[in-house]
Length: 334
Ligand SMILES: Nc1nc2c(ncn2[C@@H]2O[C@H](COP(=O)(O)OP(=O)(O)O)[C@@H](O)[C@H]2O)c(=O)[nH]1
Ligand SMILES: [Mg+2]
Image 1 (cartoon, rainbow, N blue to C red):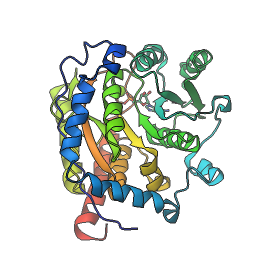
Image 2: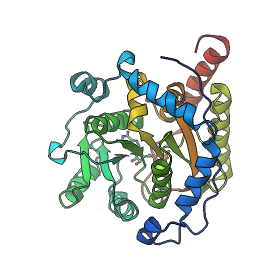
Image 3: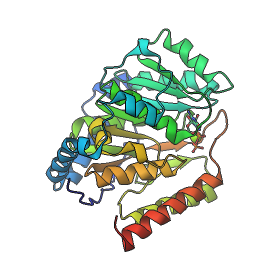
């Protein structure tokens, strides 16, 4: 496989100020929507390179077997490697889009977050990946799933971190043939209307392999963060982007939409799964597999209920790993 290093593009898309005010269902069908405007700008931004990226993505898909990443075909190996345990199999997928939402102690958030998600995005399926939350989030998810066929629940044995939860979710959804796999937090920081805009960009730009919901492009922002926290997050993304030679501005964003084909073409079994480094590692793998990456602005409000599970140690670990990858890129074989 040609392992060309492609620089992903940070696409600056102005988010229509009306997005938040629009009614979900009306906005979905309106041809003059913010999502359509965004999609048009993305298409323009990638017009020159699109064909090249597309070809590379196709090559990558063909080469997936050579890379040994057979997530869709070899359940036994992959289940084991990625920890696909205790799947509720009454809920076989088969839809187009699966939104993977890891949870740990999000009982208060799960109801309102899922209601908004399905309101704005009625076409999606959701997989909740719960790490045996002591507050009963897993049971709350089951109760909702009993009356909501689009909701699936994957129970894991105990708190094992965000990265492994995502990987288990990817594995689950790849095996069920979803074409697009999204990741989203359950705490309300990732907004349903922003997912809607991201999915429009995916739908309108078939050559795009990864859409990142970005706080660091015009129109994107955080709300309720201290200046200090914003600075750390921006500086971390700047450092990662510089060290890795990627044009992505929001490297650590967990709000994403991936094509299944690019996940199959990336060796997920060796992804660094610890905390924020997971998002950075996934980004560099998509770029290395030839996938075209675009950033769509999102608004990221701080959670109002529950507590964050991330700490400063996770940031430090991410920077340590980025330094290693960057030095290897600059001075050694990448
Ligand atoms: N399954 C699982 N989910 C987790 C774990 N840690 C965090 N999450 C979930 O991941 C999402 C983001 O976590 P959060 O603590 O809000 O991170 P922050 O936004 O970076 O502060 C939320 O939906 C959490 O419930 C974990 O160890 N396992
Ligand atoms: Mg959060």
